[in-house]
Every structure is written in C-alpha cells, then in structure tokens.
Amino acid sequence: MTSRIRWRRLVGRALLGLMVLAVVVIMGLPLYWVATGALKTNREIYTFPPVWIPSDPQWSNFVAAWQAVPFGRFFVNSIVTTLGAVTLELVFALLSAYALVFLRVRGKGLVFALVIAALLVPSTVTLLPNYLTIARLGWINTYQGLIIPVAAVAFGVFLFRQHFLTLPRDLLDAARLDGCGHLGLIRHVVLPLSQPVIVTFLVIYLVAHWNDFLWPLVATNRLEWRTVPIGVAYLYQVEGVQNWGPILAGTVMALLPMLIVYVVAQRWIVKGIGGGALKG
Amino acid sequence: MGRDVGCASGGSRMHRSVTVIEERPTVGAAVKPRTAVGRLARWLGDWPLFLLFVAPNLVLLAVFTYWPLVYNAYLSVMQWDLIGPVKIYVGLENYRFLLEDSEFREVVRNTALFTLGTVGGTIVLGLLFALLLDQQLRGISLARGVVFAPYVLSGAAVAVFWVNMLNPRFGVVAQVASWLGTVSPDWLNHPRLAMVAVILVYIWKNVGFTTIVYLAGLQRIPKELYEAATVDGAGMLERFRFVTMPQLGPITLFLVVVSTISSFQAFDLIKVLTDGGPVNATTTLLFYIWEQGFVAFNAGRAAAAAVVLFALLAVISLLQVRIGERRVSYD
Image 1 (cartoon, each protein chain N blue to C red):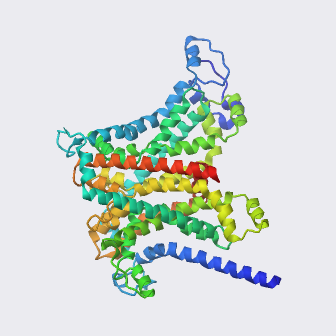
Image 2 (image 1 turned 180 degrees about the vertical axis):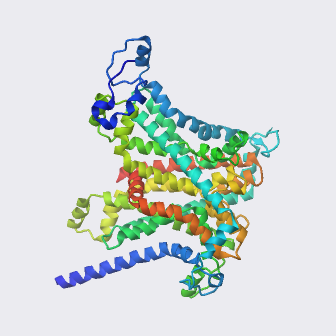
Image 3 (image 1 turned 60 degrees about the vertical axis):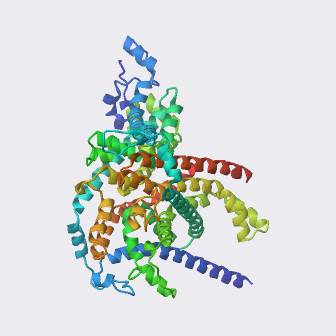
C-alpha cells in the first residue's frame, strides 16, 4: 500500500519534471539556435534538415558583422544613451521619492499624482510631438535628443516611494538628532538601506533603454547616430537573406550585454519584478 | 543660520555631508531662527528643498509627457506635412477619414487580434509555466532563468533571429514541422499566418514576465488554505479551482491591464519581422501611427490615430478595473 503510493508520487514527480523540461526546451531552443547559428558556415545555415552543432565554429562571422556595419558606433551610442538616461532617472527618482516621503510640505499628494498619472500616457501619443520638439531644438542626431525626452521617471518614483515608506522612522529621527541634514540622510541612511530596490530599478531601466527601438529610430536619422537595436535591424537589412552567419553573429553581440546583466542580477530582477508588481 | 551641529557626532561616516547641508533650511533640527532670513527659511519650511528635489523631473514630464498630449490633440485637427511652414485647420476631417477608411478599419481589427492573442497567450501560458515552475525540483531556478531570459532581450534582435528560425526552407521551425509530418508554411509572407507568427514570437519574448509575477503570487498564497482544502477532501483540481484561482484574481487583473498596455506599444518585433505586411496584415495602431507620421509625413492623420489609441487604452483600462473590482470583491 505505502509502496504503491510512493510509486505513484514518483511517477507524478517524473511527469512534472518532464513538463518542466519541455517548457525549458521550448523557451531555450531559440536562444540555442541563435548562439549556434552565429558560429555556422553559410553552407551549414542554408541546408535542410538543419545542422544542430556547428562542425567548424566560424568566429569570423563576428568580424564580418563588425565590418559590415559600424557596430562600434552603435555600441558607443547605446552605452552613452543608456547610462545617461538611467543615471538621470535614478537621481530624479531618488530625490523625488525622498521629497515625497520625508519632506514636510502640503500638497505632496498632488505632486505624486502628477508624476504617477504620466504612466497613463502611452509613448505612442508623445512620439510625434516629441520628435517635433527635439527637431525644433536642433537635437536630431544628438545625445541630448536621445536622452532628455526619455529621462523623466514615473514608475521609478513609485518604486522608491513604496520602499521609503517602509524605512524605520526611528532610525531617520536618530540620524536627524545627530545633526544630519537631508543630503546626509540620503547618503548615510536612505541609500544604504535601499540597495536591493536600487538594483531592481537599475536593471529595469537599463533593459528598457538598451532595448528601446522606437525613440532612437525617430530621434536619429544618420547611421552613425543609430543605437544597437536599430543597428541590428539595419545589419539584417543590408546583408539581406544571403549572409545569415554575420547577421546572427551581430544579433548575438546585441543580445549579450543584457544577457550578462540578467545573469549577474537575476536574483534581484526576479524578486524586484515579481514582488514589485504585486505591491503595485 | 548658525547651525553647527553636524552629522559628525553621529559617527565619522557622516562627517562630510555637513558642508553640503549647512545652507539648507530644514525642519526637524530644532534651531531658533535669529535673523530675518532665518525666520523666512523657517516659514518656508521644506518647500525650497522639496521644489529642488521634484522640479527637474516634473519639468521633464511636463515638456515630454503632458505637453505632447495637448500638442498631439492640436495636430489632430490640422493638415500638415511636418516640413512646410503652413498648418491648415481641418476640424475633425482627420477623424472622419479614419472612421471611413477601410485600411484603418483593418488596422483596428489587427490591433484587436494582436492584443487578444498576446495578452491571452502570455496570461494563460504564464500561469501554466508558473504552476510548473513552482515545484521543488532540482535545477528549477535554472528553468526559471531560461523562461524569463527572453523578456530582457531587444525585440529587434529577437525578431531578426526569429526571421531565420521561421524560414520555410532552412529554419528550425521547418524542421519541427517536418518532424510532425507536415511542411512549414512561409509564415511571415502569408496573409493570415504572418499575424499568428508575430503573436507567437511576442508571446515567446514576454511570457517570462507573466510567469514571474504569477510565481511571486503563488508563493504568497498561505499554505494553510491548501491544507484546509485538503482536509475538506479537495483534490488537486479543486484546490486549483477554489484556492489558487481566487487568490490569483487581483494579480490576473493587474497582468491583463499591464499586458494590454505593453501590447499596444509593440513596435520593434513587427517592424523587423514583417514591416507591417504582407500588405497591411500585421499593421497595428502604433505601427500605423509611425507610418503615417514618419513615412507618409501626414502629421494630422498620425495625431488623430494617436488620439484614438489613447482613448481606446483609457476605455480598456477603465473597463478592466471596473470588471476587476466587481469580481475581486465577489471572491
């Protein structure tokens, strides 16, 4: 009797394990496909049935991709844009949330509502007007044009505000009695207690800006000002369907930075996005 | 403002900030104002600092989020090619055009189809994946990692390698089709299947998000509820129906709203996978707006379509919240 129950449980677990494996294979297969495809010879790419393991890894595909389009420029543009926007957003979000939680002024609720209501405005509606604004400012094909219009934060303020509300008031009062001013409080009390939230924030915004496609597409029109995602689409366009090896190699290069960020910060991402969503 | 108390007494780590904060009027440090400036500072309280902290962000929001709403509405009643100096007032002509245009009707239909497919797909699959990944199995965190990974990737790059995978002659999808004993269609050039393919790729890329949120939700359900249900004789399906489902109700509502909004903003996948085609088969509202604005240089029509999209999103969000309130309070 007991052995039968144990046997049934074992079969159940094995079945579950198999289903999990199926999910992993379905979700992971495309990643395997692009990673190996980047190393295949064109002959291996254009055969059917497809080759699963490249026999002679073609690292030259990466060189070819790098030479076909100005990848170096794309990376510089993406790095400057992403870091610039994320830095501004972090500072804005921290200061705004601090002000909204710890400063004693009337009308805070209104300011918070103004910030949060921005979440309801889809970027779709702002696309054309913002393009016209930066065109008038002469900001097409500039870093300020790529960064400033997307540097305002709404969700980030919400994220930090939620966290600050949970900080122990006693600790802050004690630091204030010790003579800490507001900047001192931020540096020595609030920031050290906010590290997990900051990491979550950084990852969310890093990923969003690195992958952004539509705004950089509109805010630039010269090849040397394009960012990595547009650059990859461009590479696919110029190399057409004749030369998949370098195209896939370029794609891998575009994917790698965020994959690395993801692997390093996975713990916080999962916790931050899962938990953050629930709190909201 | 003679404040000579500093962070110093609180420990050496706090020493440096003293010089920075000295000038700032602060409430909380009980110092009696001796001068007129001091009294003014006290009367103003935290206001100057508050403004200093929130203003930069608010200014950017005003210029690049709120002002565009107004300007977009203005453009929607104009006829303008984005280049010439003259904007002609045309009243509601742009809206009338959209209402009567058969192409725009197709665009709305495509958007509805795309939204239903992607939101439904990511939510149903996300729940299924979360239930599977909630098990205590060896290597489960690696499995979770793989499921979530596509969510952090660039949509444009994802689309590029999916074009390769979907190739009917040498793609991996063709291989899978041949294993299943059929021949892969030319997905991206097929008038109906192109939309299906775009939806499937979108689901692959985004299902990790719903999975992670559902996982967090599952882990928050009190174990006692399951134990009580088991004691009452509930089987696995009943436990799911009467414990898991109601407990996940609010999360599902949240996910539906968030997923709908992000699905309306899908652009890079469509741009690279099909460029809105074949003909207009995968042209969604956002794609149409971009095309009208930046390819056809028809600012008025693009702006009017943007207003339509904004209104649709607002209505959908409101409806979902209303429905949600009723259902959630029911459980």
